[in-house]
Length: 252
Image (cartoon, rainbow, N blue to C red; front, top):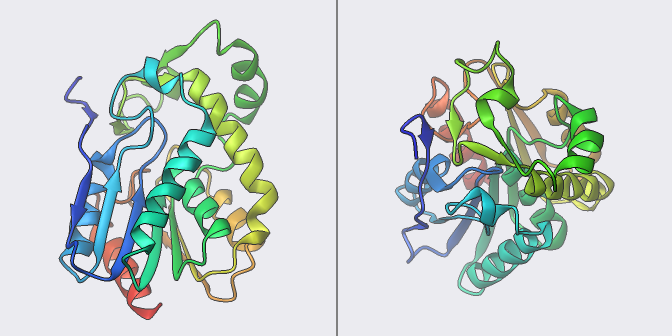
């Protein structure tokens, strides 16, 4: 794996003795590389923080292409149920596709709060996702991330996880998004929605879609200026993001 692609095969758990459980979910084709720092930070601040690789992640693009989105749903439900059995409070945090999965968890469990960062419900290239990739993903199964991003962005975006997008799995993400867009109104728990103006991979309108369609009475937006898409990994706004997350969790 190239050093330019931030990759981690490990699962992480911090401060296991705490009764305040936080489950943190990484993004599509990424790994716990992007969530470890937040998990460690929250562990150091009184929370039992868990960051795990989703099925098909931290392995190979080929394995990721063999996974259905229901496998992601089953894994997070299983993990959150296990965490809740030993916790007084449960919080779920997700980045990118992990944010969509965090929303799913909030629609299924009586969470104390849900935090979503850089969620991708609508894509920059929605037509390609809905039609071209949907029709061709079983013929063209992977595509280099840099080529997929366009020449103007290839040297500006920090890439995480696989060097290639697993395109069959990307179609599964499309199905997940379609499901969640119809079920955002099932979410009632306190919610913090985070986005960056500098995000090149997620449209800012995703923040508004979530905020305007969930039924949470207690909901907050945090729009930062400089962070890249992977909001929880090292970036110029990381301290602000981490402190806002900690404050939000402590309030709920």
